[in-house]
Length: 293
Image (cartoon, rainbow, N blue to C red):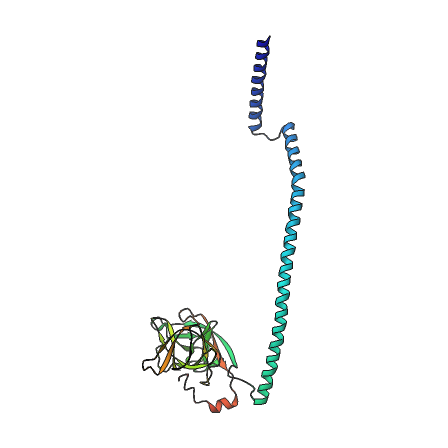
C-alpha cells in the first residue's frame, strides 16, 4: 500500500511538471490574444499597481510641491531684499544726479569731457602685413567721422581715426609702432596718476603707459582709462589693467605695462566716439598735442 501512494505522488509530480512546461510553452508563443487566466492576472496586477502608485505619487508630489513652495519663498525673500537695495541705490543715484546738476549750474558747466556721441561701424578691411597696425571701417566723412576720433569695442579702446574718406576710414590701432601715437591716460586708484599711452610690447602683448612720476603708487590690477586732457578723446574710455610697473630707461619716471581691455587681433564691430564739443573747447584746443596728429 505505501508503495502505491509513493508511485501516485510521483505520477502527480510528473503530470504537474508536464502541465507547467506546457503552460510555459503556450504563454511564450506568439499570440494575438491572451487567454482569460492571463488577462485576469494582468488586470489584477495592473489594478493593484494603480492602487498603490496613485497614493504614492500623490504623496511624493505633495512633498515636492512643499519643497517648491519653500524654494519660491526663499527666492521671493531674496528678490525683495534686492529690490529694497535697488530702491536705495536709485534714491542715491537721484541724489547724486541732483547734486551734479546743482554743481554744474554753479560752475556754469553744461557738458563734460565724458560727453560723446557713439557712431557704430564695421571692419571691412585689414592688411595682413600690417595686421596689428591698421583696420578699415565702413564709415567716413559723410557719417561725421573726423581724424583723431577715438575708436572702441565693447571691451575698451583700440585706437583712433588716422585717415578719413567719404565712405570709409582708416583706424590706427594702439598696437601700431608709431611714436606719435600718444594718448593721455589715468591710472585709477586712491589718487589719480596721469601718464601717456605710448608704445606696445609685441612680445608681451602689453601697452606701455609712460611719463608716470617716479613716486607714484601703482599696483597690479589697477584700471587705466583715458583722461580727456588732450581735448580730443573723451574721458573714461577703458584702456586696460596694469600688470607690471618698472622704471623707465633713465630711471626718472615709471612705465606701467598694461593688458589691453580690447582684443587687437579679432575686431569686427567698433564704435567711433564723436566727442560733443563745447564752444570754449573749440577755441582752446591745439589740435590734440597728447593724442597725436
